[in-house]
Length: 100
Image (cartoon, rainbow, N blue to C red):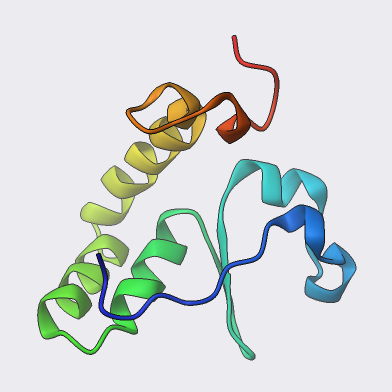
């Protein structure tokens, strides 16, 4: 578990227009929104890690955002996001669309 984790809100509970996001945006990726920036997918994870007080987590966050790791992280993120309802601990509620 991370030392600090930002509060999260399901996209269904917010007005997407307030964040200039579309339903398609939030169905494809998790978002980390700050007062000045928005990060999606693997870059959201990277930004959360870079905001941690522990140097190891911050280093990992920088790695995730740097090439060639960023491309690999993006692929891994898409895979996990697509199959999260099938992963250990996943439930049908994790699926954004009907499970296959």
